[in-house]
Length: 362
Image (cartoon, rainbow, N blue to C red; front, top):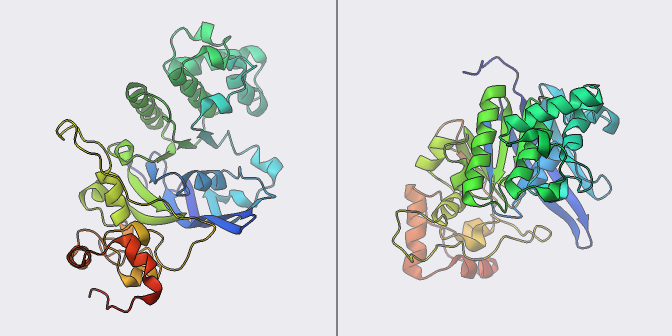
């Protein structure tokens, strides 16, 4: 159990990140806030382009300063790490907080043996000798489930399978015993069996070390049973936030519901047609007024094309959603039924938003 008086491992307050583009500023992260305590896991879910990785890199201060601008606060054990200089940050990232990236082939150096890459942080931060760093690297390879670690220490990334490379990346991230681990889609391009092994490994190591962990994924099924809380992102904003069990028992945002319905299910008959989310994610450099999901939402009403719904909720302080017509509610079901009866599509509603004169569903 977590001590309620214990300082949270990570607090993110009103985090905003924009990138300078030829078409003007692109708002990749827009007002993201959450709290994560020691030993707990937060799932961050959304399609590609929803702002998940940009949020992680903003927290870790890994974005290029010349082309991006970030505001808001990031507190690690109560310390505002965004106020640190780049030199000071080197003694925080990798030591107190670490990150596992989604593509180990571009994260690992192809011309350096994996043993040296694991030991590099130990020598720099812990001041271990080369021999001591090598011994610790061997122990870490054993902990992440790599067989014959002595031989693997001398091998290069291209000599390892995709799953083994990801295990090496986890060993690199955990080398200095961080309090916070951010795993950015750590199972990308891996087959389902290896995906499960990697996710089980991360969960086991989190429990053993009592780390706080942020698990980023586009797949809602990944966070089910593996996280304590979930935030769902769309167009750089949090559209739903709830404890994991509550989210799966009562999804309120239509986007969350659409993500869940697009997951293939073993209970479905063979050759069942997969459900998709119609349309595509919005252009973040040209967002108009209203809810960003409205052009793809079966619940959308004229109001959705004019106003941006705030992140709020009446089901308890821990569960919030940003929707005027939430799924599973009386007003939400009325909006859905009205659209079906009128043969009105979300895309058509968005195109006609400027001229829409009909009354909203009460």
